[in-house]
Length: 221
Image (cartoon, rainbow, N blue to C red; front, top):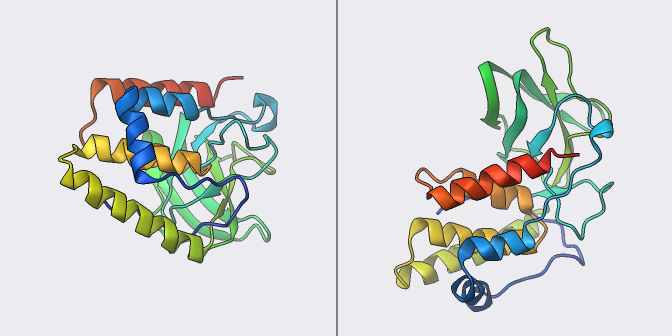
């Protein structure tokens, strides 16, 4: 299962979870119970993010500061909002230069980034626009930093190894994705874990319910 990834900055809060441990957790409880225990996204207070809530990228676990800018693994991340938007821009946070702009169909709430691959260690801002072409978020809201190239290689290799091992155990596509999402979440990469699960073409009702619950909680006050 391919995950479009670009790089990961080494951080003391990142934890490497062996394949055996991660999947034993899944077997001891259930896959989604394991995820629910660690997947506790935190958002800034509603008043600091403007009139619109970007769900991903931006999800952060409980052990990451609310004021911290989240790290993202994918160089083609999923942009998912609680409300519809008409256009999206991705800008460099340091210079405000626009690196990608895309008009969305009516009533759109999500889009995958498909511009030039984003760069490791760069901080970006996602700016959403409403029906009158006014920006709906400003300041430091909806920022994320792409992780480093060296760590990307490590994470990519770990995920490929896990996929191979679980395929040999005849695990389903959804089971493999959940096990990989557990590892990503343990490394503070909640947006990437969510994106991996959200991108599955066929999801079980329980997984759909889990994702819906995360989207609701991510934008709650």
